[in-house]
Image (cartoon, rainbow, N blue to C red):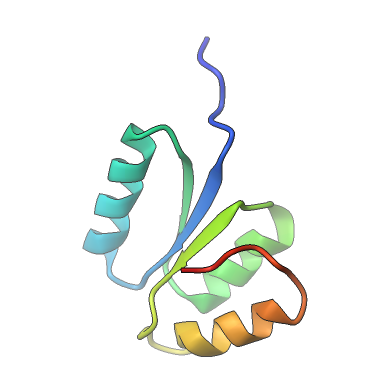
Length: 81
């Protein structure tokens, strides 16, 4: 049985192709990766899981990455790219 990777990343991107490619690439390189399709999905995941790094798309429908990042900064200090 293999161990769970130590570093948990959250990918937030509305483009399914980019999200999938990033998730596969990072998982292959030893990261535990969770993906969200938009800001609302990311908020639900953040309410129940802890992440070491968030990779955030800037331009998304609904809540964009900039406003989500600003809001997250008020309550958490997880690094965001």
